[in-house]
Length: 167
Image 1 (cartoon, rainbow, N blue to C red):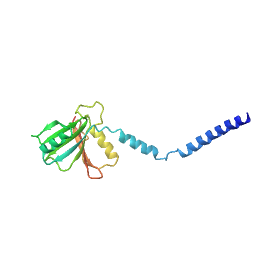
Image 2 (cartoon, rainbow, N blue to C red; image 1 turned 45 degrees about the vertical axis):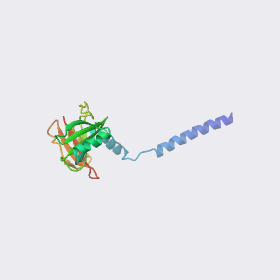
Image 3 (cartoon, rainbow, N blue to C red; image 1 turned 90 degrees about the vertical axis):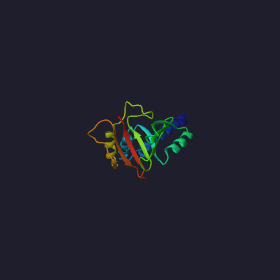
Image 4 (cartoon, one colour; image 1 turned 60 degrees about the vertical axis):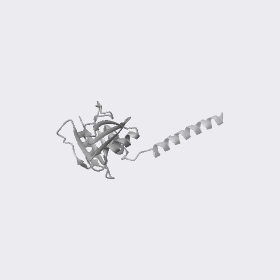
């Protein structure tokens, strides 16, 4: 009987010590709430459909290449010097003679089928948030307007990012 009490007391003591040590070592730094808030805001930003816009030398050759990868022309035309190619929910824009370099493109308010999304962040709200994070914009949306607008920024490696809201 004495051994049973010693075992129970030992288990309770182990539990108490474990609980105490967990509260001491599991405490987060004071700035953890600030970092969590920043991350939550960043993760809640709804940028819409994503595609990469490629500057191509020969639209016909690029079209044929991406068709071999399973992409099909979805929008645009050869006469307009651009095609939007689609493979399931992957989108690639092929643009001949319209800009230099490649661009990461997001379309707030659209899904990958160019269907309107009911709940989306307006580009002007996204712009305010990006400025709050200290990001420099190379072009901005007019905050006094509504509807279609765009903004551009460049990532640390020189990649251009376009947010292009069509509605």
